[in-house]
Image 1 (cartoon, rainbow, N blue to C red):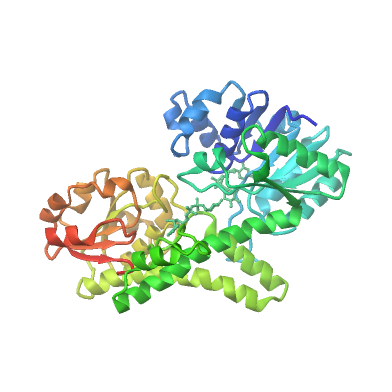
Image 2: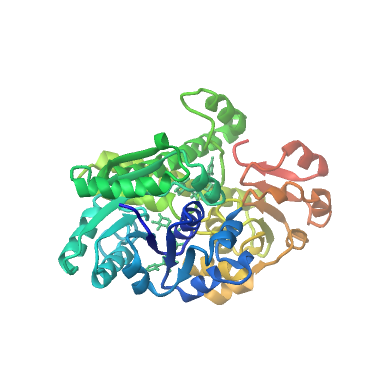
Amino acid sequence: MRIKNICCIGAGYVGGPTMAVIAQKCPEINVTVVDINEKRIAAWNDQNVKNIPIYEPGLSQIVGEARDRNLYFSTDIDSAIDKADMIFISVNTPTKTYGIGKGMAADLKYIELCARQIARVAKDDKIVVEKSTLPVRTAQALKNILDNTGNGVNYQILSNPEFLAEGTAVEDLMDPDRVLIGGDIDTEEGKEAMQALVDIYSHWVPAERILTTNVWSSELSKLTANAFLAQRVSSINAMSELCEKTGADVNEVAKAVGMDSRIGSKFLKSSVGFGGSCFQKDILNLVYIAKSFGLEEVADYWEQVIIMNDHQKKRFAVNIVKTLFNTVSGKKIAFLGWAFKKDTNDTRESAAIYVADYLLNEQAEIVIYDPKVTEEQVFADLDYLSSRPEEENRKRVTVLNNPYDVCKDSHAVAILTEWDEFEDLDWKAIYNNMLKPAFLFDGRRLLERKKKEEIGFEFYAIGS
Ligand code: UDX
Ligand code: UDX
């Protein structure tokens, strides 16, 4: 089976970059990315490729190369489904905000809508690929909808979870540790469908890095991978608090521990807390699934990763209040960074949002600079929490496009995202323009303590 036309539903952080790389690597395949969001599609089609809606290092060049050659962005979902041999579903699966499983289970309404739309439109056999992270056994639900509402069309459902991290999405796609493809390994049709997807990745990924499994293993592996990664961050963050009490330094501990080859050095960077669209959502989902099978101990074990992360964010904010003589009321706190990590404009679940929310409850004035995040996004993030009237957020929060203006006349500066450029700021000039004592809180272990203390800062860093 040779795939000639691919459709991807969802032009987001996952669908956009993944399809751009497939199109670049497979020039003989036409790839159409569709989305219900017209504004987003228009941005992907912007004449100036620098204006595509997602910032990822290296992405605009790839889109520039493949767009209108074999990569298309469109809002005509029906026609793209009709033409495709293979359809990727890459829509978002947020945590449910209502009803059964509220605050925990993944909301699959968009996935179901996609399945029903495919069933309505498809006239010939299709391979449907789950790209979104989904609870285990979603493939079965998809198949039920497709088989029972379609018009005699045969569907094969594959699970092909994405392991790309934002900020390094292009690198991760070009040179993945592994590609995971789950499918119906017990039937010839299932194996054929899996092979068709293997053939696509084989254009650039070595055979030994392409794993094929049954569909449930694939779905669960994705949740497990994210849970393990998040658990490492929560583990080192738990140690960071103990380091602060004992005089140990969390970076030194992480290095010593990470040099044990059984543990490994990656993902041991202590921080103000993990964010991003995946970790919290996927763990909550895992907890919900475990509970639904009555596995209370399994559920509690993983829930602790989230509890620790919430504690870390709060602890950072509380420390600012305590250090500033137990009140930040009317005080200007400068935030450097708002994105959930460097090299992305994504702010979903960013620790900065929660630290800001806490400080706003303590009546602080917050002034923010992030090199990639817009003022509109900052307000959208704060308003979403519904902690106070929207006008109050606008009254107390200011977003500026220059770090020096942000820090000027502030009582304290807090680093919330580890953007490289923050290291190279003229910290002497920042110090001179701040109120004294000049407090500096490093939530990312980005800055060198000694140099900052020599300048005169009262310096606080996570884990030391
Ligand atoms: C993805 C995955 O889908 C999610 O499961 C994973 O855990 C995180 O990454 P992401 O690409 O980051 O989501 O989400 P987002 O940037 O919100 O993109 C999803 C897109 O799907 C949006 O542009 C949205 O407009 C579109 N969409 C949603 C549709 O086109 N149709 C729908 O019915 C719903
Ligand atoms: C994650 C997974 O890495 C990826 O495989 C999956 O497909 C999607 O979810 P992402 O959320 O984009 O990717 O970024 P990641 O690099 O994993 O960082 C997540 C959060 O953890 C960030 O807020 C980051 O700052 C934080 N983090 C990461 C730490 O605090 N310390 C670390 O050592 C690593």
